[in-house]
Image (cartoon, rainbow, N blue to C red):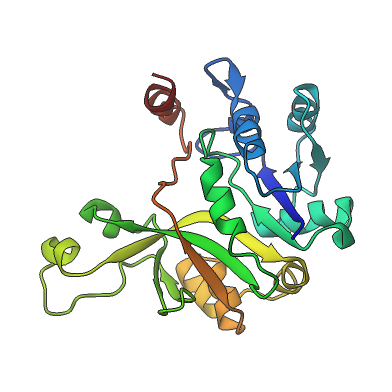
Amino acid sequence: MRILGVIPSRYSASRFPGKPLADIAGKSMIQRVFEQCKKSERLSDLVVATDDNRIYEHVRDFGGNAVMTSPNHPSGTDRCMEALQKLGTSDFDYVINIQGDEPFIQPKQIDTIADLLNGQTQLATLVMQSDSLQHIMSHDEAHVVFTKDMNALYFSREPIPHLRNHARESWVQQQSHYLQIGIYGYRVDILKEVTQLPKSSLENAESLEQLRWLEHGYQIKLGLTDEPSLGVDKPEDVDYLVKKFLG
């Protein structure tokens, strides 16, 4: 399978403007993301899809591949579609959407989702079992339940499944709970289709675009990872990640 890795990267961010160009121990965040992704064994090509000329020029300066995309895309999925169109839809079988604010993303995560992309898989993402009550109860996380064949049944901002007969403090001990890791794989023909779909009622209710796909009957294959998603949301997150990964 020929797989295109796309790193959507926007300059504007309410809590951290200019985040992709933020310095992280001598390299920009987007450069660190790009270099980590290049270590993947499964990507046929890799590109940064941005709406800002400063990011575009910076990526080109450090030797990366970048394409300019519209500033009006509502999601990274839509930005991936435009990047694919500019590079040539016939050249790839799948696209992997990689978060642009995870400077220390593990290449193993990319390879894990790539292993799911066998020609039959329509859409894919990763999940991680959590034993943290704080994370299980968080509305910032995307919680997921799935079939025995690892196909997603539902994603929610609420912790699922709900354990009706147990105190919430005991849920970690009573039931396995899984959180989504924000990386997606799309078969090229399916990516074209899902970016044409109107927003769905469940998507609007939970603010999770993957519910649009489920609501329209698409199947999302899940892969298990033990690597957490460690992104940069605000400036102080940089110091934490530098200490964790660079000592």
